[in-house]
Length: 85
Image 1 (cartoon, rainbow, N blue to C red):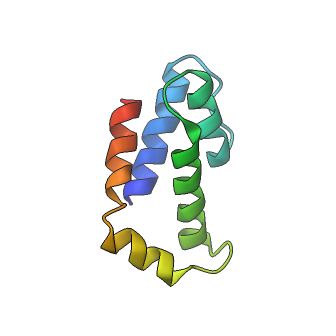
Image 2 (spheres, rainbow, N blue to C red):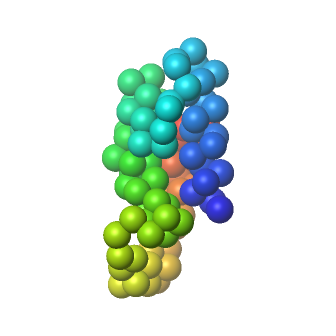
């Protein structure tokens, strides 16, 4: 849910900045990078992870999920949201 909220906020930010609203989620990182709002790499990976979890695009790597939880990497979402805001 946190990733989806971040995607929605990023999409709205891109639209309010006067760009064409991104047609698909994968366009959002590029649009924000072009605006100079943030580096696209982390947001792109986050969107990709969400797509795997939600839509089953590829196999979910439980080792990666464990690493995200064990190392507190989910806090990167908060860092990303703060950079974009």
